[in-house]
Length: 408
Image (tube, rainbow, N blue to C red):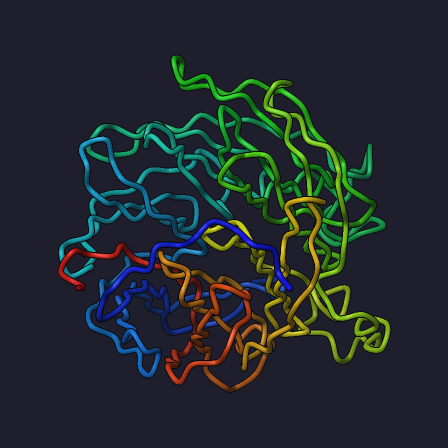
């Protein structure tokens, strides 16, 4: 049985709102993995509380590439803001009482396009992981949520020291140079999952000077490819999702040593034996995948008892239960996402629902992309398919919007 944990306060409400970034595709980039867009928008989508239906209630047209990742943050003036990565920029949107979005501005990241972003808990700084340029950006946030000028910090060489090749070269074709992919703030540190260097890099945040100072790094097993990292609410444990080999690492964080990390456990995000039974490259998700499945998104339940990871290729969300006594994970479910190539997924604020973005277009299929809803059992962590579902020509991201007082 999954371990006991703190009680989660149930929120009584009539509906849940989510933001879906979607649009009309016009082509693919040179790698075959990315989309080119003819038009795009952010859609506020409303899910009824029993999970039976989800509908579009409003939309905001976008002037450029739709976001690959989004995050909510409360400004120091008390307003909720949605920040999104959009090509080489970060855009921000105000959120009204009906969760309708209004664009307020954008700033450049100071480098190539960002793959991920986060803010510190006090809403003073925003950080981006810049996959293509091998760097992270620090962007100050004003009291009203406005973003300032970015500072850029390099992550240096990749996992294969001295490599001078281009994307596609080397023992592992995406580790020819540093590729920061995910960022998260824990305590006084910024942690960066770097797929290229095969490390989780720790920076100390200097809030007085709006700066980062290099602190430490932990190297995971060969050809893992760290993509995302999340921490428990007490900051004691971290979970790293490794994209290239579909594994999850459990890390212990030592706050007394500047947030240094040590390895506790490594386990697969795929069912035992599945990868070994699917080795034919003709069955891989698309031409840029080097294995039958690559991991994508990582999230924790609100009570820190369960970890969720999506698998692109196996097309599932893996569910793990955390044993607080051993600080180790046990797989309890591999739930099909009812679609191809699940990319981003999110949890409602109370953890009752998981909303998954499937990308049929990235598998070169004619079918539209989908947004699929799962109900989550808060005591067991298990997922169950709900009736609610949406389809778009192409979806780039999905994220939960704030719970409003008027909801119930």
